[in-house]
View 1 (spheres, one colour):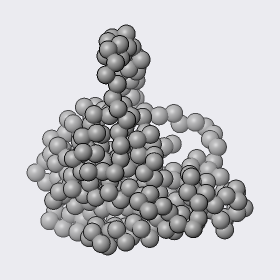
View 2: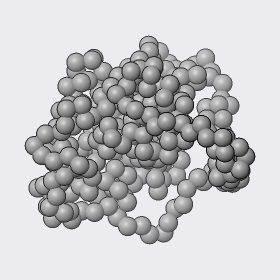
View 3: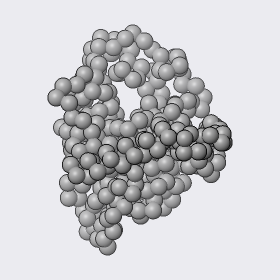
View 4: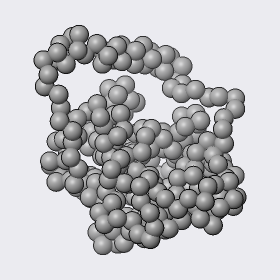
Length: 298
């Protein structure tokens, strides 16, 4: 996928300050046109650094929620010589048990296994099949069919600039919620010890090296509907999300990570089909917060 990304064919100009944004579907831009995404609006803001360089922003978000998936993108992106990395995150990407569920992770087992080994991550990659038939053309027919289909889609995406469906109507994110305090298989009062993959964040910082990384706790829908005293939204019971925020703030302070907590920066009316997906006005509010913080230009 990187081979078809604009980054791959864009030489870095001497006066360019190159920013890459990694993250989930909220970064990728569900229901948003490319120019309406976080990276698109930041790029269109025509920002300049204190030393006069032009800020160019590239979207490396990818749907599904997994910090390991983000780590893969970050590792690959370093060959494009970024000057700054923005890494929006949310609690749903942190549970250790869901790190390897993303299809892009499951289909890149060798790459992920190498990252697990290199950074001593507390994750166990499933065994890669060595069955003879699985290594033949017959055994690989599903993967080959997927590859061919994606190549054909790539032609259409390149020709139209559209890589998703924009439905006229969609099911809006729930505002009335169940009276359920569970988060996955976790129950109050506390997140399990080592339940959050903070070690994956630390690995990302090591990959970036001298390149600054800004962690951003991305906005979530804060419901005012039924049972909103128990849950912020469909994803998050209040107890789990509050403890996650504290854990992320503590880890950032302890490790001197640059961190913006923008969880409540966007009113609930600007979320679309998910508690983490923003409309273009909501993305604009997020952009204003990031720009005002000075993390890009200072």
